[in-house]
Amino acid sequence: MAKPEAAGSPSPCRIMAAAAAVANQDAVQPEGSPMRANSVNSDESCHASMVKKALIRAQRENRRLQRRVRYPALALGFLLMGGSMFLAFTSWTSQAQLVLLVRDLLRSLGCISWLCACLPSDRWAPKIGFVLLIVLGVKCLIWHAQKVAVYAHQLTDYLDVRQKCHIENEEVDCFLGAYTIGTTALTYVVMRVWQLPYLAYGLILPSRATMGRLWVGLALPHLAEGITGFIAVLPAMVVKMRMGKTICSNVFLYTSLRGFYGLVSGILLMLPSFRRWVQFRLLAASGAFTAAASIAAFLGSCSASKVMEVAQNTCRYIVLDKVTKQDLMNSSPDAALKRLSVPCHLPDIDAFLSHSWHDSATKKWEALQAWRKSFKRQHQREPRLWIDKYCIDQENIDASLMCLPVFLASCHTLLIIAGDSYLDRLWCLEEVFVYLQLSRSRDTIEMLPICNDLDERIRTFDAEVAQCLKACDRQKLLATIEAGCGNYQTFNAHVQDALSYALKKSRWATPA
Image (cartoon, rainbow, N blue to C red; front, side, top):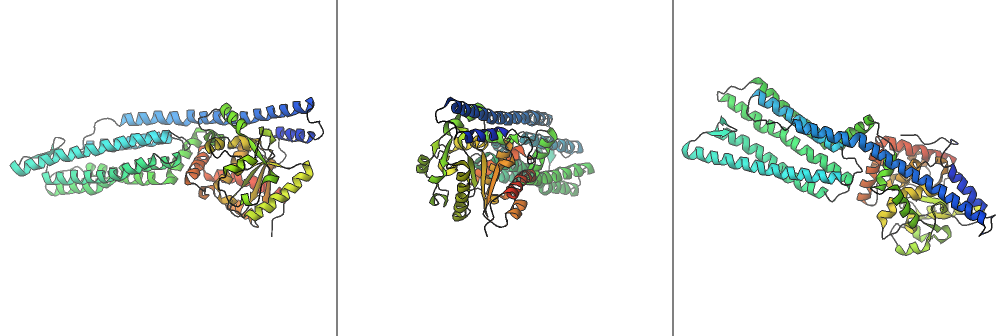
């Protein structure tokens, strides 16, 4: 991932500087003059072209990631699963147990490969995986029920007429076989009864949460395999040997390895850190890691042209003199506030306001008014801001959020009011990150600090533990981070660098 630009380094955002110069010249040119109209149209066209190119680049990088990761992982999964489809009987011979061990290894690696083909920001792939795992779980329940029913019939015949019992054409002691089959079936039934509702509930969760449950759903059969190996199969072998039967030592070895592999792999698959490690390593090895994939995750399946069209049709700003202190008191949506904002072209927005609704409204208001006075002295007019509460269409929030990267890239300045909770809010961190990934220079970030220890907070924040008002929003944002960053440390370092630079160059004194 590219580091943020150093101060003064060349940047595509010099277009923004040109746009600002045009805006300053507006005061000189008469209101309807052709020169002014041509300048504004040229600026808008240049600006829209730059933003659209950034979106196209993000989607191109996302497609490259799919070519390098998704399709190879799917193909490898099919090969591994296909190699595990040979017949393997459960007779207690060393050859059978070795075949079972190899089969279990191929199946689990095949499933993991398929899971790695599901990227954190995917919307439908995890749901499809869920459906398949649920179908396999139901099939497994039916298979165990049939196996218990068949053996119960044999056991009845043994009690009635002393007819010998068999498991897969191998004669066994009827009661020992009943213990083995009954314990195995009970373990798997209990596991499936817990697994299936767990998976079914995941179908209504955000994709990232669904992915986590998908890995847990795969871990449970591994754990069940390991548990049955140690509490059913191995004890039955010991009893059989005490009854005078001969069992090869390799059978004990391979059965123990199967049980140990099942327990270890099941535990690992349950750990979120292991899941992220596998996916991040895969993406890093493929060379497909790029922060632009995070932008593509915001856009979803919409094309760059469609996103630009929606953004241009819904873009609005609020003149700062219409913002009241009362409105900054809470984040509760108020559709009436949209009437105060003004439809506009994308380059018309002076600043995108990034702040935490949990910070002191009084301090934010005072900082905003001080910045407003400074802006008016410099530009001889009121500033025009993009503020979510005024500019988002409350009746179509998803469309507004899809356009968030466009709105961020279109503003001349990212205005940050950073208080005690700013770095604990995931939306705030994501806004900074997306702003940087759309070729915006950190020189265009202006910070208004409203707490004393902001430098320490910047050094120590962690996006992985940052929160959102809605749990589903948090899952979506974490998915966009995981889609484009090798790990959270990389994301943190990227944002820390920009915020530390913005704090150092801030001309606004930290309040006492």
